[in-house]
Length: 240
Image (cartoon, rainbow, N blue to C red; front, side, top):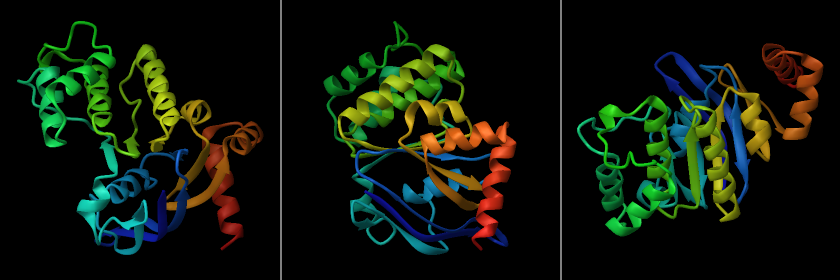
């Protein structure tokens, strides 16, 4: 469903992503795991068509994202790392606005909002929302279109434990519907709970692609998340 071939992205002299290749299968939940600044967000933005590759290409459903962006983006729904909505709009107004952009009726948009369990806050101003509530509204917007590919950048940021639980239910439900989901995180627990496979990002490079079971076993040997990253840097260097 998603194919990344020798993707490199530079910003001036800085290389954010360095020659990565990766395939995410249809119906798979794939996690990008790595510390801040490791290239996860740049990779997701490039898949979503928001960054132009310096070299390489990204295919979604067999369509080149950057040669045919309008066609490719019909298959994608994207949640950015930092979600921002107009503070003078209510949650209902936000969801209806994005619904109209995607040609979704008000009734259908309202149904998505209700399913997101805003518990009476649907008609409150965004200015009254906590960071977690804004993140939940972002997830509601992402689920508006029936897009086969969901791209989620740090989706559990700002969520309280109840919000994380609901997010996990959201991912499980979307997977059951056959959606392909790729998300970024620096939390090993999120990978273990949600992902089928994981790509380890370190310093702009894709150091390894692992099953969750292999990752768990490696972590038990490494001891800390920092040692885990160092382990994969070492493995990556050995194959240079």
